[in-house]
Amino acid sequence: MLSDELKLIIMSKYDLVVVGGGTAGCAAAYMAGKLGFKTLIVEKKAHLGGAMTSGLVVPAMKSSQRKLNIRFYEDLIKEMKSLGGQVTYQDNPGWFNPELLKIALDNLMQKVSVDVIFNAYVAVISTEGKTINGLNIKSDILSSYNYTIDTDKLPNDRDKLSVYVEPRYVVDSTGNSEIFKKLNCKFLDNENETQPSSLRFIMSGIDLNKFSDWLYEIDNNREVTSRDTIDGVLHLSTACTWDKNNKWALYPIFRAGVANGLLKPSDSNYFQVFTIPGMPNSLAFNCPRIVDNEGAFSLDNITKSLQEGRSAILRLSKFFNKYFPGFKNAYISNIADELGIRTSHRISGKYVYTMDDIVSGKKFEHPVAAADYPIDIHSADKDCSVLKKVQEYEIPLESLMSDEYDNLFAAGRNISADFMAQGAIRIQPTCFSMGEGIARYLASFISVD
Image (cartoon, rainbow, N blue to C red; front, side, top):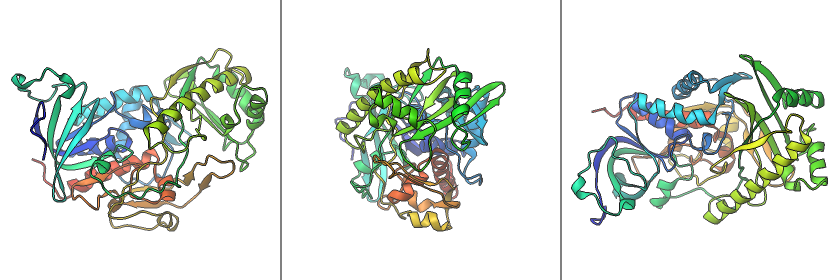
């Protein structure tokens, strides 16, 4: 049970507490609120969105068009469009402005009366048997919004303010299974199964027309380099890696940057770029991929990866200024607040989803998501990455359910899945469906007060 030494106790009961307001967590909370559940999000950052906002992971990758648990995604697209932060490019509606996305997610949660505590974390978990019956939430910036506080009990040490909530159900959408770790649950991790992380960034002040014209002159592969004008605004995308699975038009230019000392050889390992709705002179970069420091589970590893990533971003920006037409006056305008982490602590749930399930297109009694995104495994070594196309597959609810606690779920890249399968199902639309699927499942058998 919780300690009697807690400085402040605010009692509140929730049908659903979502820990982690990122991709899957927002979908779970929104749909739960829409279905009438009293819902709370506990978010460690000052805004929602997780990898989409803090990590600048935009656009959302395109996946199956099958309409299975996609209401949150559809409502998010509408909200983003109303804010001027969304376009549909190459039949993909998930092209979002990451800053406006913070506002859109606030708006959506308010519309369905979801409570949110920012800058907060779960400090203590109370259990009874196989049930979580209490969460002690702490925050350095704890607002009294939506709570009644007995001011006579307020401590002088405001850093230790606490909220105690009693949840009927809990969703761990922290990405790295922080709730499952606190409960000493079983995991499927293998230290030899890792993917390198990335640190994304944005550059502004770009002459996109000049850059686009140059790209089209040197690259005629429209599966790699594309452009279109949408509502009078130019949008484009291109890519390059050091792998030999494609004849990358930009690779000789990266090689010249290495030869001239502007880049390290590892800086040319992965490059991908996208335009951003509402930011007409800017580009979002899916790089650098940090190949010298694989994995990001330890604090020391995260620190080194962030430092290496920022150093690489500076080198890349100077390289672009010199070698890319249209970049003469371009500058770094945003660096992600967190790493783009592809692998994480995967729970050992009621069902372990496998690559064989994906390849076979196995059907399940309780599917929460349908997808056809390929098995996508990034490697730190040349010519070792995997991108395997597959048919449409389903993801079962049981792979989101704890095998040790009856009212605990995982949603997102911490799903109960083997390493290869997780490499396919970690993308945003699939994670949206996971979160929404949990809320819809709960609505099928629990009543709302």
